[in-house]
Every structure is written in structure tokens, then in C-alpha cells.
Amino acid sequence: MNRTATLALTFLSLFLPLFLFTLLAPIPPAQAGDLNLFLGVKSLNEDDWTPLDSHTELGLQGSWGPPEWPVAIATDIYGSFDSQDLLGIDISASTAEINLGVRKIWRTGSQQRVRPYIGGGIASISGTFEAESGGVKVSDDGSGVGAWLGGGIFWRLGPSFNLGMDLRLSTATINLYGVERNAGGGHFGVIAGFGWPKSRA
Image (cartoon, rainbow, N blue to C red; front, side):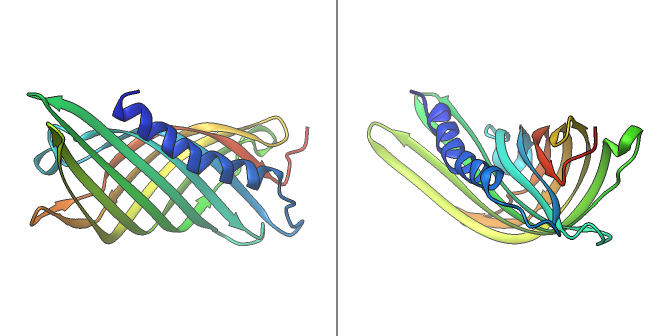
């Protein structure tokens, strides 16, 4: 199994149990929210990360709070990765993000099933860069705090299923090998999950 597939399975093994636990756990009747899986790409700064500046990204995006609140609490986690063979040297890079903030979700359209949204807040981002050749491995990692801003749209299909798309920007400076780099980037992908309370038929 190649490095990319291994990393993908690692992220899935972390995200899916949390997603299923939340799906099956009892939800307080006074709460409303959405929990969506994210699958897409993350474009990092080319000057900082080339040739590993285009990552596959997985994530879990949560919005929570009483329905009467004007905005929901946003709690999102993401992981991105890329790897290549460069002149016989295996190189790989990965980032992980925890995004906290607020998210405004509008309910529009027929039976309020069209849900555009926008949000922003604080981003905690870590990054790792690794190179390996002939059994010798060199790696470094760093972390930093910055900000995120994003938006998108999803549709409520049936009583609780969500399907849509998400666009986000994040930024945080980290230090790798003595060089400051931006570990954030541009993110785009599809989201699918569920929301509560259930929509009326």
C-alpha cells in the first residue's frame, strides 16, 4: 500500500467513528445542528510547499447551537496530505487543522431546504514534511495559530441528509527546517452528512 493510501485510511479511521458516534447518539431536543464529512483538495502556497502543494483533504465539519441563536458554533477538523517520489527520494507532507468559530446558515427555498452559509474564526494548524531514501528518514513538524474564513451551500434531502459544497481559506505560520511557511491554504470540496431537527416532508 502506498503512502497516500495509508494516510487516507488513517484519517478515515479517525473521522468515521466520531461521525457514526454522533449520528447514533441521542440529541437534546433544544439543539439544532449539522455534521458533515468533507472530501476535497487543499492548495498550499507554492513557494512554501512545492512540489507538495496540492493535497487531498478529509474533514469533519460541525455546526451546533439552539435554533433561536443567530449563528451556530463551528467546530471543524481537517487533515490533508500529499506524497511523491522525487529522483528516488520519497517525500511527503501533511497538515492538520482545528477550526473554531461561528457559522451563519440561512434556510431558504422550498420548505427551507436550501442552506447557504458563511463562517469564520480561529485556526490551529500543524504541518509535517518528511523525506526518506535508503532507509534514512528526515522529518520536521511545526504548528501555529491563525484564522479561517469559509462558506458554501448544501441541500437538505429528505428529513435529515445534507449534500453540498464548501469553499474555505485558512492561514497560520509554522516553522519547518528553520523556514517560516504558511500551513493554511485554499480548500474546496464536497460535503455530505446529516442535520437535526429533521425537516418536514
